[in-house]
View 1 (tube, rainbow, N blue to C red):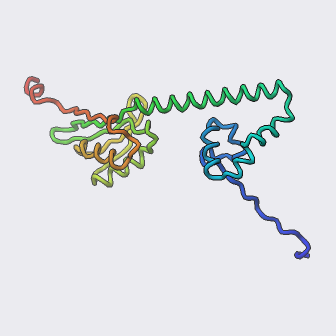
View 2 (view 1 turned 120 degrees about the vertical axis):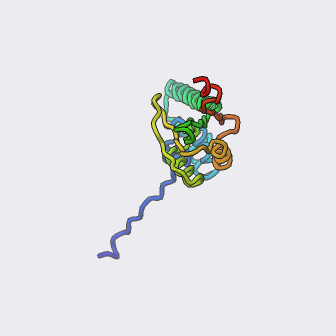
View 3 (view 1 turned 135 degrees about the vertical axis):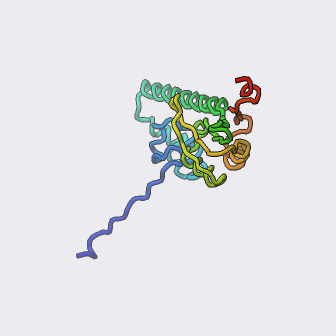
Length: 192
């Protein structure tokens, strides 16, 4: 009886490396152009089957003239929207600043706070753990009063943190790192 039954096999599905949907559904995401580029580079036969001019013509052949016009208009609108979102993200990244601040805790005790890393897509808990390992100190992620998060590292390690960030996290440009020293000047302490 087992010989007469056909064996069932699972179906192999390719997923897009950009939007993680099957390539047939990439057009419904917001990254159509990136998805097309990825598919053309990694799976040329699948790209030809879905996005070649003949395939697009066959897909739109059953549509009425009005529906074709609407589809073309929607495609242009989606492409413009995706491009605007990409430009906005690039501008946000260019304007983002990582602030490394040395804060005096007691007379000779300091902590170093690092804020602004989340704008570069870094996971703060992982970065805090890396800081703790690198500098052999306590390091934690804390919430700021303004609602954001920052990493607090025990000790005065501001210049070392800057070097470490530039060395390990290449996505942070050197111009976007700002060192701030919150120590009180000796003159102000003497006057007060």
